[in-house]
Length: 458
Ligand SMILES: Nc1nc2c(ncn2[C@@H]2O[C@H](COP(=O)(O)OP(=O)(O)O)[C@@H](O)[C@H]2O)c(=O)[nH]1
Ligand SMILES: [Mg+2]
Image 1 (cartoon, rainbow, N blue to C red):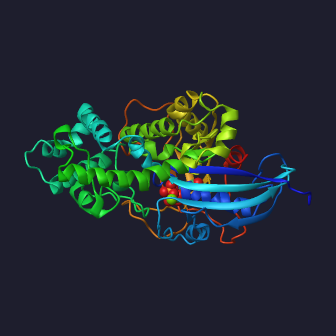
Image 2 (image 1 turned 180 degrees about the vertical axis):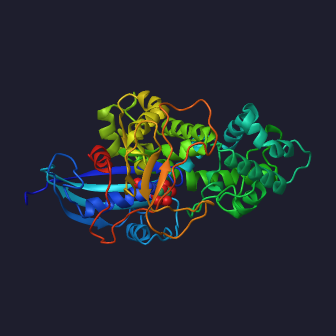
Image 3 (image 1 turned 30 degrees about the vertical axis):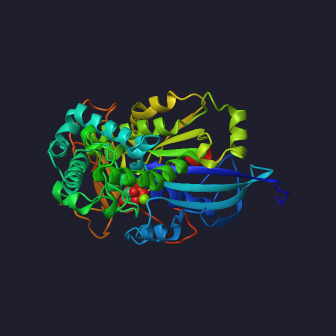
């Protein structure tokens, strides 16, 4: 210890997943374990590695700070998450680790919304190109066509107004959300820039409550060829709003993803099983799009040498993406009985491995993780009910209840492979209150979060 550390190694780790997949809980637990590190409870890197001189820095310019203190407090006191002010946040810290002799670690953690991936097609496309692409999808996929019927009718109506177009498009997006379809673009309809998600409601209600664009006053929707005449107020207005949206939402988000050295991709197997086959298709499509946009791994134009040079010489937006590691993470392991935890890993692998396997030069691994272990398992033989102990979050009617005594409950047995079809509700993994120690310097029990951290922080 005390040797001169000559350099700082920067690790930029993005955590991406859909709403409620466990990003906030994972980051909160990870930060707690790094800050109040105990090598026995959180073995990081080489065996016996100690962390020291942990300091927190402010976020980079243009980023909101990840509210660690508020999130930890909410976990302890079963409170609500602190009110969000933004859709993405960053936490920056620096520390020394005893297995790195000459360098300390500057770690930047990013909380990134997976919902934005649906806007990826806007990158490098003008309003016309994007309109074509979206309308093609609507017309050529039965499920999309059905959801979008009122909008597809409206665009054909002579003299249709901006108001009619926008309201039928919002109705189409609401229908898509309710049938678990992934192409919700502009994605602010699903998750606005303040981080507020669309809440489940009847389609008309949802369409009225949300907006499709930067904000209420700057909405747009795709237009077919005969409505795209340059010089007409409708077309010119939408082009302007579209360009502004791309500049303010899409470019910064994709730049944030691309600037990461490693990505943690959360795939909530429990949510997909509980949600039905539509939700599985949705999430898989989003992971595929994510890989298409980010092209992680080395590519043929930018070998390791060019990458090094690019880092130095190219302006930020032009640099090659340098995500070299992807950790696929199945969260909430503790909601699944120990008998089924290997299957959880296998299911995730079957679902997404292909996307990473197709990339040269990308290192990827799979982890089943519990960020905050909140259940105890009771023994179960083969074919017996999977019984767990925990504090239920919801009553029999599905409503949230205040935390009470620990109870025995059963979780579904996991299948060996994804079924060809399954309905929402066929599998159930009851949610429980998180078990977070009140003592702030005592991090929660975790499973495999240490292994995940070892993989991505390097
Ligand atoms: N039992 C259990 N629940 C978890 C775990 N991680 C997340 N959750 C639950 O999943 C829900 C969504 O988590 P959150 O981090 O807010 O998701 P986000 O929207 O992706 O940030 C919360 O109600 C958590 O209590 C875990 O390790 N174990
Ligand atoms: Mg969150």
